[in-house]
Image (tube, rainbow, N blue to C red; front, top):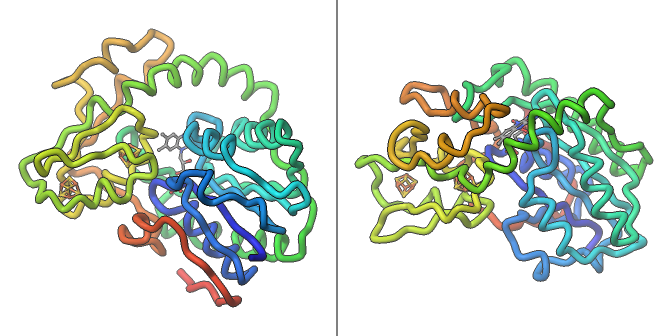
Amino acid sequence: MKGRIYYFTGTGNSMRAARVIAQKLGDTEIVSMRNDPGECSAADCDMVGFVYPVYHWTMPAHAAAFVEGLEINPNAYVFVVAMPSFICGIACERLAGILAEKGISLHYGNLVYSVANYAIVYPPFPPAKLRIPGTERKLRNIADDISEKKRRAFPRAGKLIKRRRDRLMTPYLALQKYADNPFTVSGDCVSCGLCSRVCPCKNIVLQAGKPTFQHHCANCMACVVSCPKRAIGYDITGGDRKLLDAMSPKTPLVKWMGLPAKRKLYRNPFITANDLTKDRELWQEEAKPERF
Ligand SMILES: Cc1cc2nc3c(=O)[nH]c(=O)nc-3n(C[C@H](O)[C@H](O)[C@H](O)COP(=O)(O)O)c2cc1C
Ligand code: SF4
Ligand code: SF4
């Protein structure tokens, strides 16, 4: 096995990135971070990649925990591609820190600014038709760099972002344990279980045919954008109010959370809901990526 790329994704941007790079490299497996890291070790790989969105100006907590548990060949070429919408913050530094503790160096780091997907806070922006052509171009350039094993220092946050992050994002992160309390499931649910299969955190269990949320949610939006009946809603003021009640004055963002019935939802145009259910894919030969 030449390479393995580990991805965490909610709405497909990061899975698309992992695929484009694997297609260029050939003989490369892409592996969802939904898997148990003990069962998909990178001890035998010469090339190891990590691709993930940026959440709250850092790496998603679930992705960080996955890498902490992963065994990696210390002689491998290691890269990261983070997929922010606008602010990357410490998303790459966080990974570099986890790898450093294992004695692993990061040889290449890059960012791809993508469509912002946090559906319970805002509609998708910039519109996919404006942003995707640029993200696809950048992905192809990154895939070329990686196939040549180029070296590139990973992007770091500036001082201002670091200071602001402590003030704005740290209190918000403390509320993550309540993040799935406001999810609602309407009577339109047909108990198909797709929401459970796309969840990268194994956070949804069907009980008596009804999705129930297990309180280790990343708010990734996979379930929301994949439900064929649009049965999943988010109501911060009704029902379980733990998130709203725990809100500190420093996290006014929480007040704005919700999912109006007519809000446009985004999923990467190259990735289907069925793709989001996959645990791993092997790209054996160089393939030409489809065009937008
Ligand atoms: C919970 C959450 C938090 C986010 N926080 C940030 C952020 O801090 N900075 C940023 O640039 N984008 C942020 N985003 C946008 C995503 O990083 C971006 O849309 C990403 O490309 C989604 O990747 P995916 O399709 O692989 O899930 C956030 C999205 C979600 C759902
Ligand atoms: S995907 Fe939608 S319809 Fe299917 S079980 Fe989940 S909420 Fe119900
Ligand atoms: S429950 Fe939904 S939003 Fe939460 S991690 Fe799973 S798919 Fe993502």
